[in-house]
Length: 61
Image 1 (tube, one colour):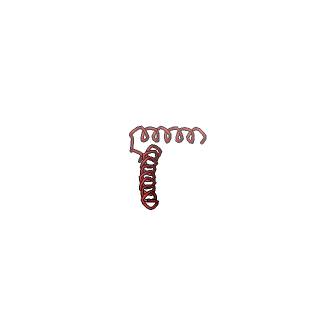
Image 2 (cartoon, one colour):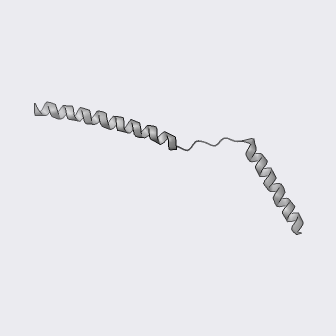
Image 3 (tube, one colour):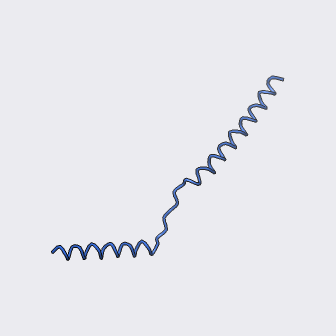
């Protein structure tokens, strides 16, 4: 009977560990870094930055 209880405990422990791994995997998805999309706003901001730097360099010289 003790061996059967031990087998049942191991099945319960295995199920609990599997469930815990599944839950931890789901929680990690929220913190996973998403790939950045190429947006036109970044291009516009880059162009504005270049214009500002060029005008400041022209005004210095």
